[in-house]
Length: 280
Image 1 (spheres, helix red, strand yellow):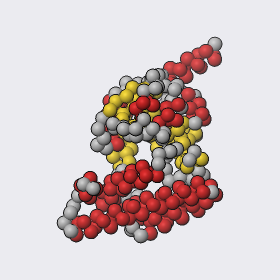
Image 2: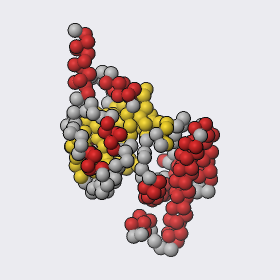
Image 3: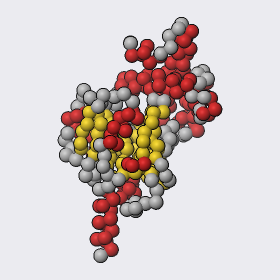
Image 4: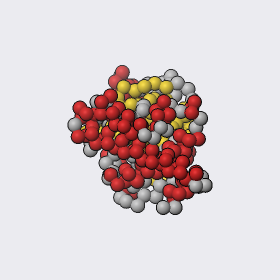
């Protein structure tokens, strides 16, 4: 009798969770992500008009409900997705977030009526499928009550604001992006334009120590390289660790170049860096 009741509670809880994903040309990733979400009765995907095989892959999963919306910001896309969800709980994932069996089991074991409003998860960054010892990715609220949540933009990224209490889950999510280096560079350049806006418009007192360091331009890339390789143990991960460290080093160099460019454009009387990028 206990086993039957326990199974019913688990099934009822899982049916109150709707995964939410954003996609744009995520063919190298989306299948691996959706394969770990087959327990969900309904999955909401907000696609920004992908032109690769993403839509074909998505449509092969019967529980996926697909919505297409022109991209304006990550927060707007997520809030649009939330408006399409009716379940009590939302599991918000990027298209390259892979749930492992431990995390799935932990979610299944959560109480039906928890005393918290959101759950926080840590990440393991993967390079070509291999999890690294350390990462720059901060923990993130990924499972939360829909009615308590709203998204806002934060530089190139976005964050969900959830009223109430939070709890940290034990298992981690694998961040395993398999898109090409060219696509990564394309995305990073656009991300850094948003980061420049954030760094320059936010009062210095409201910036984290890391963001204050990034504004210095010259030192930040080398500090990040040292941090990834030595303090985060990337050097012990072999070439996978070097690859990640070089990625972050290059991303910080792009940010430094964008900051310098912004300063020069302002002196030339051009105020909108985003317009300059869009015009290229």
